[in-house]
Image (tube, rainbow, N blue to C red; front, side):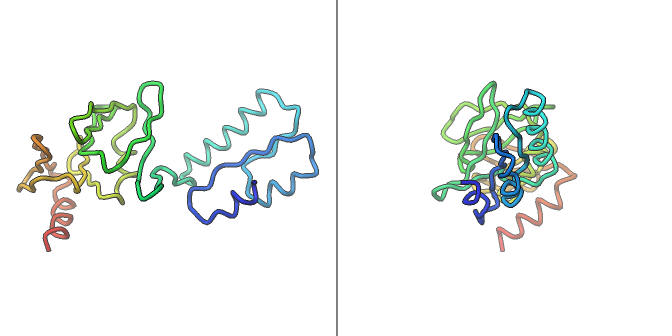
Length: 179
């Protein structure tokens, strides 16, 4: 199974940690680029060490599985309360930053989702999926824009201002859509 996962050509490879009682298979673990190889019996400290290696790799940006595509749908996983929710990207109208939280506004009047995440982190995930940060507190989905105004955007009944810092980037993006 590890060989099949390692041979996957997609950029969304899983992190592999081997746990086994057989040290002779350690070489195979390195061949498939396993994160760690833990011999049984192992203790809690060994487990935490392995998980820390995975976390470190994620934090270094070596894993880009933030946006997942499946069956022609793109989605992202967002932590909401004590759950991790799968959210289809095309259901997002706009995202509002609220200090350490974000509020994701959705289509069809669905209740907005509140998540402990920075707007910057979500911006990095969504930039290549038709989203644009137009204000220090807002990221918009260009697919959901109803009207482009000089210094704001209309999505549904909401008028979202374009911040001075983001005006040049906004103008460039609008020029691409209009021409």
